[in-house]
Amino acid sequence: MGNSIKRYLQFVRPYKWLIALTILIGIIKFAIPLFMPLLMKIIIDDVISPEAGLAAPDATKQLFLWVGGTMLLFFVLRPPVEYYRQYYAQYTSNKILYDIRENLYSHLQKLSLSYYSNTRAGEIISRVINDVEQTRNFVMIGLMNVWLDLATILIAIGIMLTMDVPLTIVTLLAFPFYGYSVKHFFGKLRELTRKRSQALADVQSYLHERVNGVSVIKSFSLEEVERDRFDEVNDNFLEKAIDHTKWNAKAFAVVNTITDVAPLLVLGYAGYQVIHGGLSLGTMVAFIAFIERVYSPLRRLVNSSTALTQSFASMDRVLELMEEKYDIVDKKDAIELPPIIGGIEFKDVNFAYESEGESVLNHVNFNVQPGETVAFVGMSGGGKSTIVSLIPRFYDTTEGAVLIDGHDVKDVQIESIRNQIGIVLQDNILFSDSVKSNILMGKPDATDEEVITAAIAANAHDFIEELPEGYDTTVGERGVKLSGGQKQRIAIARVFLKNPPLLILDEATSALDLESEALIQESLEHLAKERTTLIVAHRLSTITHADKIFVIDAGKVKEMGTHHELMEKQGVYYGLFQVQQV
Image (cartoon, rainbow, N blue to C red; front, top):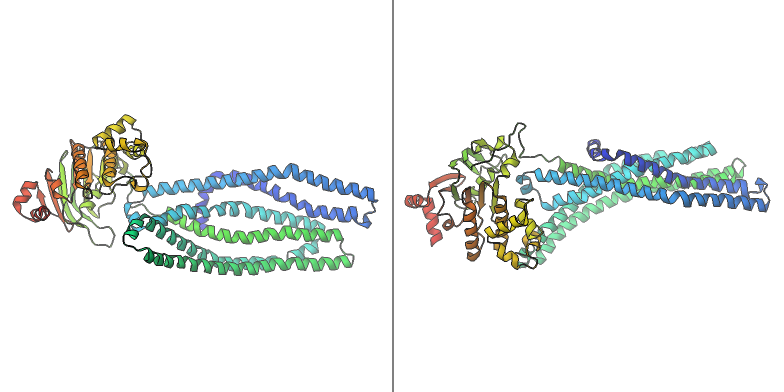
């Protein structure tokens, strides 16, 4: 836990003076009510008590002076103190959480595709949203309220000691039992809280996946089955939540009993002293009032312990995500890749997605000359998409080297590689934003004229103009408001806008109808002119024009040549082509 707090404090450190100011204002806020028990003692012993010796008019005057003066103090001082304490506490905690989420999002951008392949989106979202929000309690309670409560207790005890030392000692008799019970119960509560948080993340992940795949659920009439599956996940969360609740309830039962018994001890001892003349009635009343001022913060500290336990568990999960290692990173001496002309070489490349897993690519060797259009074909799962994923370093080779214009991609800066590559996938992601914003991802600082020019080149301008708000039309999550062909043309438009020297088309037309495929094929051929183009193709009829065709099977290059050369060989390619023609 200590290491987690130390790491978390790096986000707190920039705001340490704001936190100190908040605590100072808070001490003033909590110190003001501590005058109330003293006021009771003064009024009882020095104003209304017969021993005070004041006549009724004088006693009345003194009463109103003390009460009126205190009310004036409360009305003048308390509101601004309360306002600024609340404001600075909330402002500081929100700024810290903002910084953490910003850091997390930046960190998530640098994690490799393999991390996202092995981690559920709902799990990530739960950590960035729910767990980060839970760490607010560490700031609000652990760094502010706990110190305010401790200051309140110490100030109250200090005042009580000036009034009566033995009675103060009786007041504090319950403190050791309180400390032991907190340590005993809340030690286990952190682990129970962590399990509860994980179970909640499982529920969120399940919901995220099912909401995204609701069309599949409906098409197979799986509503009842999915409800039963959700019940299992939800039941697991309920079980963990109840375990947490049981232990929490035990803790509160014991601790609150201790804090409730303490006032009885004070009442018994003080009453005895008053009866035998060892204590004034006003002092007894003041002490009973001070007990509430001492034990209320103690009860809040118990509540704080629960909230802090939740916060520490969430802190662990947030920092665990922050500590996730980057698989793909720049070398210390990595150079910027010069403007490329598009020569690609694979030298004895082996690759496996898992360190101990089966190899997906085995001793792959080939060359692509600048400006060539080459295609990778073969059965699904052969390694075609994996090959093109190694060029922009979405993954790194297990063995061997991938070279661009003679530069090993591991020796150059990742950003300088990807800035010069345009990629069109089979299922291109569009974000829930305007058509224009999605195209601008290819070049964020492009002008409206450049956006329109790119859309025209991608055969997208005409249908965009027919949308309700044209280029400002929101496309919905993942482009749900557009057809597959329309989404693909917008994806191609942003590559036109980027205008990269190297182009990768990964089955860019395989999931489209014939009319959309024809339009997109035309725009892709336009896009591929005068640049190196690598095509992963399922439909062999779309790549007969390629300068080279590589047949990939079981992670190896089985055949290589032009369409006519491979057809004359009558090998694997010939067989695949004949099947598709039939």
